[in-house]
Length: 595
Image (cartoon, rainbow, N blue to C red):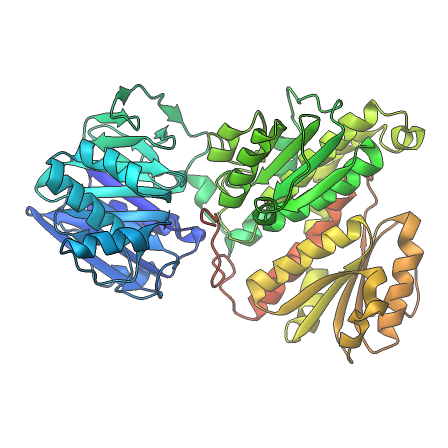
């Protein structure tokens, strides 16, 4: 979601650092951008609606400045306009803020009653006013921050400049991600590593309730009681190349092509947790991570013989739950900061459940909250539409299904997956072959890119893949797309089929392949343009399709990782033909850190 970057130091021009950092955070999604910086002892605030380029057009990057904060906003409170853009200043306090102050209306009324006025519709301006009031009351930023944390409810990551104090940058963290970058005679704050990776790989993570006082040569971190605490300086494992397009036109295309290497890295799983003794597994996730969970459900139930529920995290939080200490709760999140998933983990722990995170970002909030963590090793994923992180999540679930199947008394399962480890080593080569069949996907995209309605159908695990394929298409191309369980067509959905309506049918399960083909015949007879996606072992000829994609047959625990690639590349090419902003689709954010 929103991006934060801050700089204090003697080595660089703050404006240049801020703009570079914000550009590296563009992938998170935003609708306005702004910076605040000190130059000649004067505070300057520049902000604009729309892309960062609009902001740059009003800046002189060579302006001398050694202190500043910047922000990309994804609108929550108030319209996406210049007035609501960050930073927000109230008297002595200027801030940038990610998250939501849930009780901002009550706080705003209290502040208005003592004379504060407001120019924007945002909760952020209220936060700046509250900190300003507390600072003027106590004449101490430490006391002001501690009292702010007591009064403000919700989640927030905040960077602060104090008028008249050009030697310090402040940061507060609760619920939203915020790190401190460590340099030589300079330091940084950021909501994510890519903002500062070109300047430093050393960083400090802030835990909820902690705040920091940062100068050019010193960093002091305090707990919620104002007591200074020691923090470990960590080092990011990637480098600046991980956020470079490396010659690809879009990050999404680059990340699709990185999947074979990601699968190779993630397959090296050490110290897998023992999950054999749980009576039930519940997977909590959102979006594509939830779709990965649905694939995992099929694999674990079919081969591991343990019942699995998959819950949308935002629904899990508010429903009646039937959990106990014999349940394993698996939380899946690329960023490790997904607000609803984080809260779901906390709820599961209250029920005494053991929790396992499948996460891409080390030291993220969900990773710290879970009892065990398996990291997907996908590296930085910049495109909003996930591809390589999704595949890495599916791979880990496949590995978990395999470990359960090894100890199963299900003879069929043992026979089918006996060569799993050997097949896993070969999988990157197979995936690369599928990725390289680009002309096939471009051809299909040319036939469907101008259609108003597109449908994906499948049964069982193929239905789970259909859901992810449909989401990929709609989120980056803005075309209306739906996924349906193939057997449900005759219960209403088939009424939506008209002449040349694209229907992508996935057929990879031998047990139900004939049933799905029968459904494809039903839509074909009503004029649909059928794209038949199957494996070479199940390939059938006939008059029930217009185009066909035949994929290599691999170990059944790994087949979903092959089958998803055509859906990703068809979506990518459709969006490209429609001239969409593929890496930064409208209204979407990479990391959803608010409810």
